[in-house]
Length: 312
Image (cartoon, rainbow, N blue to C red):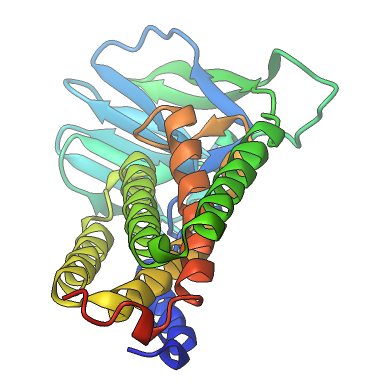
């Protein structure tokens, strides 16, 4: 595996592995400016939750019938222990793509729980001059014929400063550069270690984002399985290759990890990190994947076949 293969393999890496994301395109949402806090409600037999990543509403009924009303006050959804039905005459239900326009009720879910993307959970535009609670959201409903509401508050979370993370990344790159300048013989092992660290960090971050942002209540286990298989294949290649070939593979892995992590830069710009890990941990993984990945690529380009020949 010569250095001439690095660029094509980087492209293959980024295309083969699941892409990181920062929007609502059915990929994981990694960061937000607002946290949704549900108001205490008295809804006997009903459990309500919010999936922060995609602003989905999750409702589970135990021994009741809950009717969710749309923007015009029309019945939109009917949720009961026997399933969920969408009103085909509801303008809101059609706009939310819960059903097609028509007449009557269409069954859209079986069982007592239903999750849907609720546009009324979309937060207001971010205003850096505003702190604390933002406007409330309210969703009208009927519980066994009694008028009720599902509501809560948008709480703005201050955006973090990226300078500490930039300084840490610069320190890592600088320290590696100083050491390798003094000890050129360590370039091969350093590239391998940095590439492996970047790949592991990118994979862990991806899994943490994907499991936390369970779009419509379902974790994308298929994407996680593909990423895990891809990581396992690279691990086998690391074991089988030696010398400069291993270092060049490490550069490819590092470049791929850095490229994948570019989609997660939102964690450094928004206060709420949608991850199964603490916010600081998710940011540290993304910073490590980016810094170590770029450094691994740069270091691997300086490793020549003859300098590591005989290291098998």
